[in-house]
Length: 93
Image 1 (tube, rainbow, N blue to C red):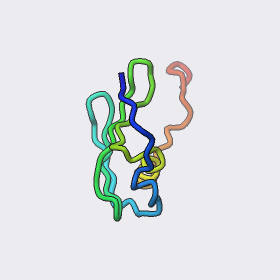
Image 2: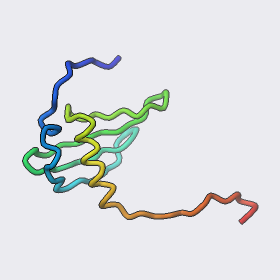
Image 3: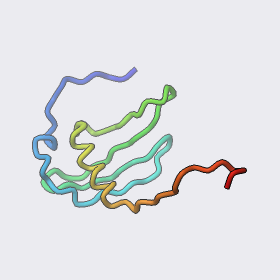
């Protein structure tokens, strides 16, 4: 069972304009980990996993959802997009 913590306004969410300097993803048992560096906030990591019911779990180091989205946006902006096209059935290629 997960612990419940009091609602706090994380430091990073009060300063969303701070530039994400670096973000990198790595495999992590049961998911993946993002290491990040944000100007005037510091460095840290998020760990993403899927529980047995299929729910996404994020170990966010108390940074809050808006900060996680801010870092994820930078990661997506840095990504190489690949369009695999529509899925085709094996026999109808």
